[in-house]
View 1 (tube, helix red, strand yellow):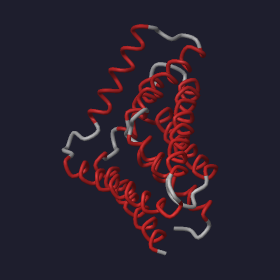
View 2 (cartoon, one colour; view 1 turned 180 degrees about the horizontal axis):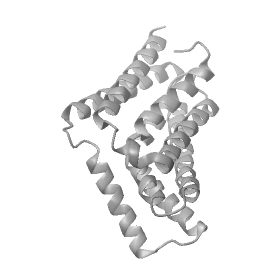
View 3 (cartoon, rainbow, N blue to C red; view 1 turned 90 degrees about the vertical axis):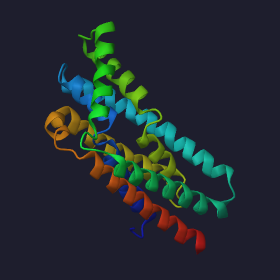
Length: 213
């Protein structure tokens, strides 16, 4: 990892969030909404929801870190990163050829239900709909857990993690709105899980090294 803690936090959060969000349920929600409404409205609502969940998740992670003695924080980070990384790798191994189809199907159900109840024709209506759908889909998602765990890492500042996370969310949301259908057909959910799992194991080793220092 880079020697500069701020750069390390920004790069780590950007990479982790980008890998976690590609092909995720919120990615497909933005994709489907952009196929029915103006892309910029969908982007504003989706990114606003992701930004709010990011702030909440980072606050939870930092709150957890503040409750513990400083010498236990690296051990906690190593445990959380290691467990999360192993879970992603195990999930990737269990995936079949239809990996990712379930996320797209769930997103389609969410969008269809929202559109049938309250059809959106105005800019504010689309922004509000995108915000609500993405916010609900993101709660309890693997990206939220990834953000919480990143906040427990020793030496990672709130500002750098927030900047990296928001950059990752902005990139993936822009891709979903602009060329999501093309990308969605070519994403390997299994590969993304493996890359994410490997990345979090690297984070675990980094935290373990700090704990033993």
